[in-house]
Amino acid sequence: MLSDWLQKHTPRLVTPQCHLCKLDKLPSDTHPRWCDCCLRLFEPTPRCQRCGLTTRVTVAQCGECLSKPPPWHRLYCVGDYTFPTARYIQQMKYADKFWLARDLAKLLASRVEHPAPLITSVPLYWRRYIHRGFNQSQLLANYTAQELGVKDEVLFRRIRSTASQQGLSKSARLHNLNNAFALRKQDVEETIPSHVAIIDDVVTTGSTVYQLCQLLLDVGVKRIDIYCICRTPEPSG
Image 1 (cartoon, rainbow, N blue to C red):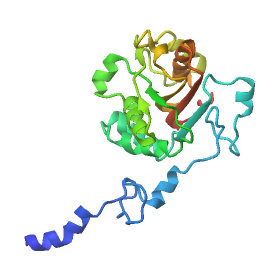
Image 2 (image 1 turned 120 degrees about the horizontal axis):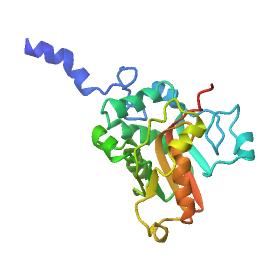
Image 3 (image 1 turned 120 degrees about the vertical axis):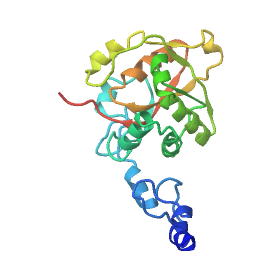
Image 4 (image 1 turned 180 degrees about the vertical axis):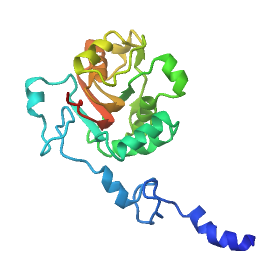
């Protein structure tokens, strides 16, 4: 009977479930998407605060950054490109689950201690944007800015298509992206603050954000931070 079906299934319809373990969330759970138990899978690990790579203990700069510092000052991330963060990145980008950007941005924003007054994003080439229907980095910038109470603005455009970065070495990635980006406005130096954050979903070698940093430094930006969901080291070999 209908009354029996409603009695059996109504609690399941109205009780929120953890998106990861599928168990009922408790009223005490702090995140709208995950239960507190699964939320521990996203807990931060020790990293170099400059490049974002994992270290045995948290340090301001690792040995590599001391000898050859990147053009940015601080990198904030949720974790490496492993379970469960990699799963959500893949679902967001390739399964059209763009709404996951809000939940990932909430996690990212909780890591940022000193927000930049302006957040911008890595641009997509127009053909890829049309194919995907959205720019995941721009969505992350929108939601992260909302969480942090700062401004977000699209500062860059991609002026040429490039081959996939996957499988390329660091030097090949840099060459592949050479002259691939430009600032959207020529008079950007008159309106841009001295502290800017660039957001991307995944940072591996840093080749993409390196190119964007150079554009900002050229117009007088003094401090650049990188925000990302995953900071993954370059594959060995």
